[in-house]
Length: 361
Image (cartoon, rainbow, N blue to C red; front, side, top):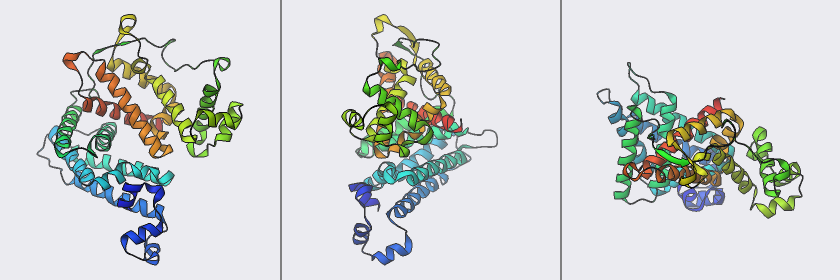
């Protein structure tokens, strides 16, 4: 399962291919699993249980928090990226397994967070759940985006930088690792508490379709959407949807990308420095958090349910994190420029905390 899924994608995996590759009969397969979905979930659970055990094995009461988290994250990353097929399977291709796989991913990430907290908690100090979620999210993103195809030397350097960032986070030296430095931006119109949309009369067909996607996805989720439902809600023929979007996932992710950029308008607007006000990156991120808090349904779609679209949703999420991290890094003064891995870890951490808060809200 791991090898076939990593190399060809989960959609290409069949019982026949699995049994042929493993050298077992179909009867032997069905004695153990109910189908390929069940096999996927079992393989993923085994990989992630090993990762959690590696983390727990690093616990030492003699270690300071920064040293402890460094040891734990090195163990986690070493387990996940030691083999490229295992890394692609557990970090990327498992997202193609549908709602059951997504539920399993969320559960296994909570298991990793619990393992991290178990390592770091002491009688005199407890690690907040949000900090553990931030550490796991940043580490998994690092593994997924920077480490899967990296050379040993590149991987070692990247892990060192992530561990340095994580140590600063648990030592309370940084607020999600983002320093307060000036960036050029134009504040949003109004009080900044909500992301404004154009009036219906001003929207073109694409705007109407995207608004319909959000309206329908908010209560029912991605898997309840169809192109005909979206088109009907927009008051347009289905052919218009197909003209604007390659498929349903494309429309869904385009709508989520717009919403995300509206939350982070200070970082994504891209106005010229000479004509704009100055805000700090920290201020911009706090404004984004406030906007997300004022729109919990939109925040839940953006930060939590983007991956409902499977591997395409995961790719969209990682692309948006990279976009925001690049904006943070590129707009800082050259003398204190954020290293890319630190910027990406910080945004991935913030994304995870927003996902957590939107889910609980």
